[in-house]
Length: 394
Image 1: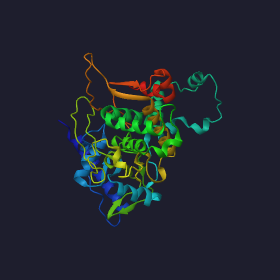
Image 2: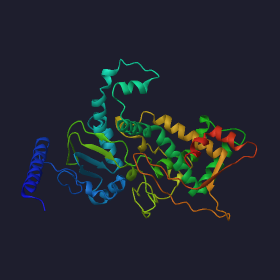
Image 3: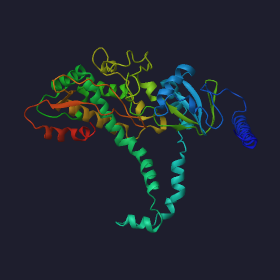
Image 4: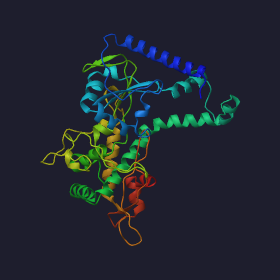
């Protein structure tokens, strides 16, 4: 049983917080316009209990879309968020109103890091080979803090190297599950490039099916399910809804991109997530043809959602696209990937499973990678195509 004093304190705190929230809303929204619809919100915790899967928020966002629509408002603890579930709204906000929706959210972990270390005041300390000793002398020998720094820095790493590797793993998974697509792409490469050399960027215009395959890889399983968060610099009104200042705006890239039936973990049954079937018929299927006209030429849809929107679009998107293209085409030219075989020579079934996090990728799956040519060693081909890096992930 709680004593009367504790209950009174708790009730008073809740009342004060509700009052402050009301005053803030009235100040920011004097016209009393409605916020976008969203899940129920409670004092302190907000809508956090409405997340069906807190490790995979995009799953919950997809469920919210079916209940509340393409633009959803929610509060997670002390953070107010707006979730965008459609390409049209994303373009309207991030490109049409980029001056409002291009700010960066403030993250407590980075603010605490800057405050604790005051990096600029230590800028005179020269780099040397006794970093560990200097850290100890200055009282920085904190294992827990060092771990936190590494984890914070890993976010930036995930935005570059991790996303590239994840995309290549998605490509390999798609080829294992869809050997007919792999064979068709290899036939195009053999017809255009031949078997006496590896292809280069000059060959790209003549390989539309391979380009469509890359776009379908981006669409089929986006490695950034919720994209890069934005923040509003001022309040805004969109389609009659009030969007507050300093709200975190998230685009549900998973919803905008695709549908795929997967297992996200060993204890979660597979589920179909239908998204944007008008634009992508049969969205759970891996079909590069959806990016080709009837005459075989490429459509104008380059599937750039994964690189962000508006002024905060990834500055390295063209480099990343070129790197993915040359990696995928070089692999297809020199290798084939198939389902692994058991001791009886039968194919081992592959059930797609994905990790959690900001950047996701397929979990380890059995496969066998074989050279397509007999006149070169597997080691040489791996060096030429960069397969060695990918193989370490399998």
